[in-house]
Image (tube, rainbow, N blue to C red; front, side, top):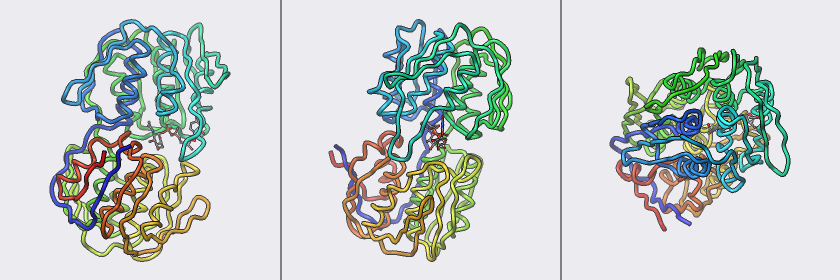
Length: 417
Ligand code: UD1
């Protein structure tokens, strides 16, 4: 298993180009199931979740080719299976995104139930309820969701709770359904309108994506398209904190500051200087950091996917920062590892109290999930001495060559094979 070795306290300086959004590329690849024609996706990050999706789509019968420059060509001319097996779903929960498109295209889908993961129970009941409203019969047995439909028809679906992949799954099922579907209390994360824009380029009729109400008028068939996925807001946010925690001066290019408004505002409140331009950001650390409370919320609130990285930063701020995690019930696994590096953190239910500023010292730590891994890397950048982050397969699921990008701005970081 690969590890990362970081020697902390180097000042970071330079420019990092932000890659495409993993969470946009995943549903975009699943959308290839909706047409017999070729889909060309650009700006796809070459991270492990994308390779897992390639394996899954190939098993279903999709031709998938990767080009050197982050381009992926997909063609689902004919499908040979309607099943997402357990061994793929267990490594990547987002495999559930094939449920809606398979049902729309083949009127049949069998997808392993994802089960819980390190950060929480994460059920998919809202995906299932929505598909039932569209006319599917859904049974769960032997650990699988089995959905069939004579045909899918439009319906009004009111989500009890905001769900990102649930909204995406239902949108992909509804584009080929007969009649109008209205999704209420839909997720507004930027990846949702990005998927809607792709589907529209394929011929779908969708209004309102990016707002809580999405209206979809079903069409008989979709065609191929060429589409560029948006920049990864979590990668950009992680590097913003890398600049802030090291007192560095980093420019991030090819990103969308508009997708990071809550994070930028919170970092400014904590004393970090950030300049924004249309597609770039510049972060300057070095001033005194002060603690600022955070409550994770659905977009446009502060993203849960940035909570762990923010906690690493708060160990370097004076005062007590209260961090409330509202989206997932068990997303503080990084706290105990940060404490092994010297952080002063108390967990009280959904709240973490981070008292700073504490001097961090390098240690051997274990990554427990994707964003927790990023938090430990950030702590390692600020710590005295060497930090070894183990189990970075979590990190490789969602960050492309993070060590090379950080090294290019002066970090002392290497991958140990
Ligand atoms: C997506 C993102 C993930 C991010 C999360 C929240 C992808 C591939 N992943 O995950 O990075 O952390 O949004 O922004 O885009 N829930 C239910 N029933 C359901 C579905 C969800 O109770 O059927 C609950 C979940 O347990 C969680 C909350 O709703 O507490 C939000 O989850 P959801 O938005 O669905 O997360 P994902 O789409 O899995």
